[in-house]
Image 1 (cartoon, rainbow, N blue to C red):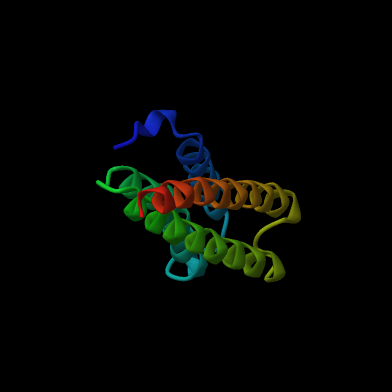
Image 2: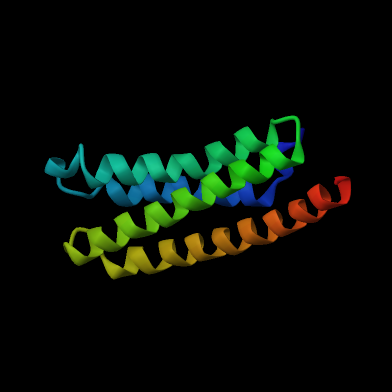
Length: 123
């Protein structure tokens, strides 16, 4: 088990989710069940999967949940780019969000590499 408060990746994912909520609050109401819902669900999925993995009993399970979180980050990136192309998300908001996503993806990849080494040592 890991202490979530000490996991930098989890804290950064929480910040991203909050930023996505703020950004999508300006979307048109007809996107309530479309891009707003999908973007928020993907954004929440990232820290939630990191948290679930951190609470699991094995390094292998944690690594798996990091992979799910990473998948959600790619899903979120796609939704935000679509919103930008539809002119409902300004580039001034998109660009920092993409930078946050890029940073999280790099952190996730690095974390997974470290966990893989631990997993391979055990076998």
